[in-house]
Length: 158
Image (tube, rainbow, N blue to C red; front, side):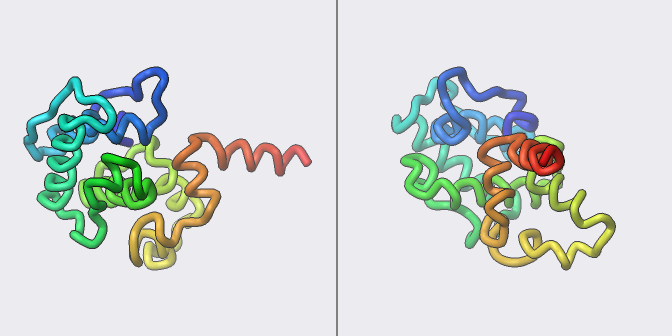
């Protein structure tokens, strides 16, 4: 989702969380979502520029309507102390910005699984943090895109 909104890709040799820890793509996503911010484009992981990017991103999330209780702490993302809290912030930003894309597998999966059921049946959208009520499969899908599809294919083959 971040890559789709910010029109950026995870740099080669990095995983999503390492790239997010620089804050570059996150700040670029904020700009696209209408929250201008200064982005240190050459930030590296654990640098002061990355910390500034992360601080600006978290501030921007609050400005765009992410509840304070769903906004991670700077070190959760900057130092990857709590990656799930960082991912929860990103997913909540997606929800408040209404920028749903196929690149957000958990939302797309939940909506397809709901098959027309009311949104209130999707606990992860209405209670707690986005990741709080998410199954392990959905967490794996977020971290390893294609996980659920592979699992379904394997089950069908058996």
